[in-house]
Amino acid sequence: MHVSTFDRYEQRSSAVHQLDPRVKVVLTLLFIVSNVALPDGAWWAFAAGWALLLLVNRAAHFSFGYLFKRSFIALPFALAAVTVLFTLPGTAVASWQIGSHTLTVSDAGLMRFASILIRSWLSVQMAILLTATTQFPDLMHALHHLRVPQVLVSIISFMYRYLFVLADEVIRLLRARDARSARLTTDGKLGGTIWWRAKVTGSMAGQLFVRSFDRSDRVYNAMLSRGYRGHLLTMNPHVMNGRDWLMAGVGTAVLVIIQLLGWLT
Amino acid sequence: MPIVHTELTKLDNSAGFPTLQVKDLHFAYPDGHEALHGVSLHVAPGEKVALVGPNGAGKSTLMLHLNGILSGGGGEVRVAGLKVEKQNLPLIRSKVGLVFQNPDDQLFSPTVFDDVAFGPLHMGLPEAEVRERVMRALAHVGMSGFEERLSHHLSIGQKKRISIATVLSMDPEILVLDEPSAGLDPRARRSLISLLRDLPLTMLVSTHDMFLVHELFPRTVIMDGGEVVADGETAVLLSDDALLERHGLESPTRMLAML
Image (cartoon, rainbow over all chains, first blue to last red; front, side):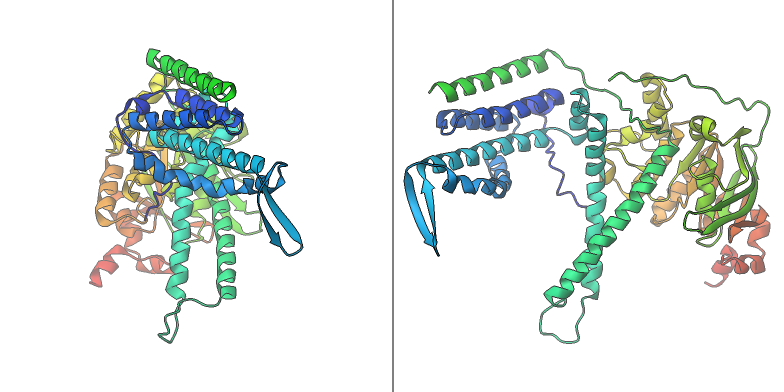
């Protein structure tokens, strides 16, 4: 029984895949920072960012649909910004009467909301490309090299390693629940009331916590048994070559151009 | 970040100490449950010993004492003459290759290579030697070529083999395995048995698999209720039906006779 939904790496042999993971991590972060730093309504700069994304996508041998389909996972989070529609002062575009309250959408609010939506949409796509072209262990090495605190890197890599184990455990718990959600009639409904389901889900969450806690104990013992003394050591297989430096330079230059485009037009 | 290589002290066992000496070991868990009541055990270099007994007999608790993960209940453990105590722990842990029952606990690194390299790296060995040991350990368990694979994508049989490789790479004096054949299908179990037979190492293996005991281990130790209740030649112990029955075990010959 395996859950592989978290595995986003796509095996290809493209130039993007072969790029040093440090370069990819840094450029992805810079791309996201650059998106955030662009002024509202810098449509041409946003378009240039999108063009860059499509270019990288192409270079990584992915189809247009691959990136496009996965890009929408960020939209629900962008909805957190929906309040700017109503709170920013500006010319009214539309307004609704709800009870005694009036909700007014301003033009400045609309522009900011659209910009936030585009920024997060673009940023998420670059992150998707990063994880699709970089093996997870390489990503961890990159973070390690980039002086991210060791504790954080360890937490992330343990999380990744045990996410699969946990997800398998959840599936087993769910199956055990379904197997016992029996009835003596054939009216089609499995399981009990919402209240019953909530109770079962609650104790499953508790079970999961207890099991994970026990497991962390066992994993820690396994680490101690192999000489762990509070410092995780890893080997460093990555060496930056000329092409990596070149791509780092080119990428940074493109981002500077996008910034200029955003601020000067 | 530079890797700090601490000086590796060599364990000198030219004096011919037993690989394992356990003397009058007691232990109670913090909740008051007494798991060990005076366990004593000797294992000579090169011996392959099976450790059997019902669940809750104290087998796993004993194993966790062998490299000092549990301690403090009275009695002592020596590995190749070296007492298991705080200042000796780093050395002891490189000498006792403890493999846990669940490979998902044993394999905690993202890749197979990282997991097998974990022990040697934390022993402070130079990178070239770590690499060489990883290759050697993987070759030993027949898993060469799996270095870059992710642990969670492997089958249970493969995970078990790699779990063993994770301690082989530390070049231990004794291999301590907890339930190595649990959850394996017949083919994976068979290949594990031949792997354990071919490994030229001292072994202490806890198991419920009486056929495995019969096939691999010349000597058997039976534990029950936190004590060693029998210790002797496997053939003799396994033919004592009354003894086996008393401690909730089944004789493999009796099991076959029922067919």
